Image (cartoon, rainbow, N blue to C red; front, side, top):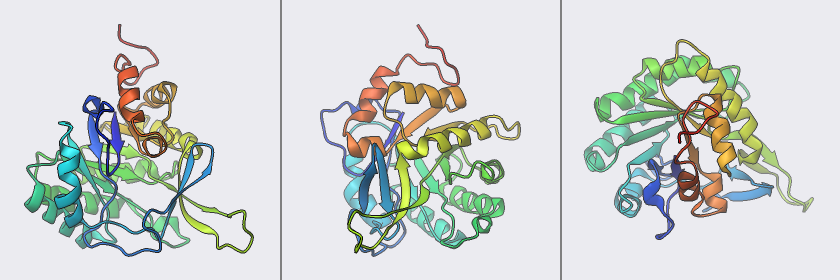
Amino acid sequence: MAAANWQLPDGLGYERLGGIFTRTVTMEPKPGLYEEGVWQVAEQTLLNATNMRTESAEILAHEHLPHLRRFGVPVFVSITAPGIPGFRKIARYLAREVGDQIAGVEVYISSPDTANGQDLTAKFVREATQAVRNELGPDAAVVVKLPPWPEHIRSLAVGAQEGGATALAATNILKALHLPDDATAEPLVGGLSGEALRAVALRCVWELAHDERITLPIFGTGGVFTAAHVTDYLRCGASAVQIASGEWLEPGLSARLAHECAHVAPNSNTVNR
């Protein structure tokens, strides 16, 4: 079980986790309208603004990483970039600056801001993964986080596997729009996470687990709030889960569920006794 966050408070049992994933960073900071553009738009459902400010890899390495490493569990840096050279650049920077302090990276694959989802191809995923793998070397873990597209996720996953991924994560946020109660306010454009995403993410995990070409372990991520949700992902074929929205809404949730689910067997609906 893994948590995705910046700041994790002491005393909540995070040393029980299998790993900590940072929030996604870019090579250079990305300016945005919002410093913390996350809104709760429904029960256990968040909208993450498209134009939210993004931290740089340098800030992550020098300010946030020391805080996260104190729990004594593996830390993975989540990275994204607009193209292959960008992924190569940020991976090279992390390998040089903090390669001995992190377990690996999460390659956050997002679709272009266009109406054509097919613009994101298996070839792009393969080349982005390969670029990161070449910079980090053979020993670092490279987890590729894919978009919530059940009808396309198998081919994208094959691309990640061919590029040298260690594991897959299904899924990242689902593009969405929220209309505030104030009719004069601008619509909030971003990506859904949490409860509203879980059914789609479960289907994506199931698709990956039932493709004979895919041999990598799968992280289930999207709307994990209870031990039953963890079990649901494992039943669909996940080997572990990530918790992000749940941790944002309830700090300490990841550690509590790690304790509650310590006896659950992956890839089954049974428990180890």
